[in-house]
Image 1: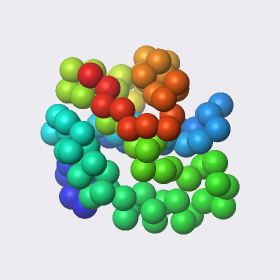
Image 2: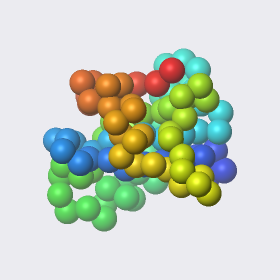
Image 3: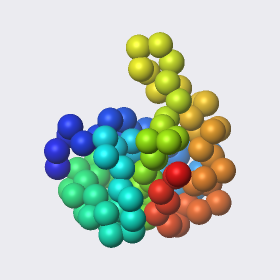
Image 4: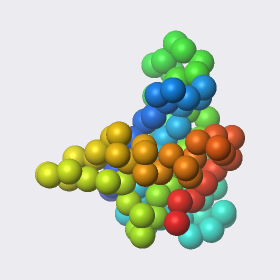
Length: 106
């Protein structure tokens, strides 16, 4: 996996039954085929991270990897830090009801 392709990632699971991984990609996927390909590319790294967790609900599954779009990036503060709570609130409507499917946030 080319780390230069990932611009930002935010592991979330607060108040959720399962963890999700909203991810900002330099060139976001434009269709389902690109999304699937990108998830497969990242999956070995996600598996390594999952191996470090002993709690089943904190492991990220393929269907909980979510990509943002250039039109709607994660919210930032000074020095490009991700505003975690604001981002989760802003995007919450997009992934909370659909935790069992891959979503491209447009």
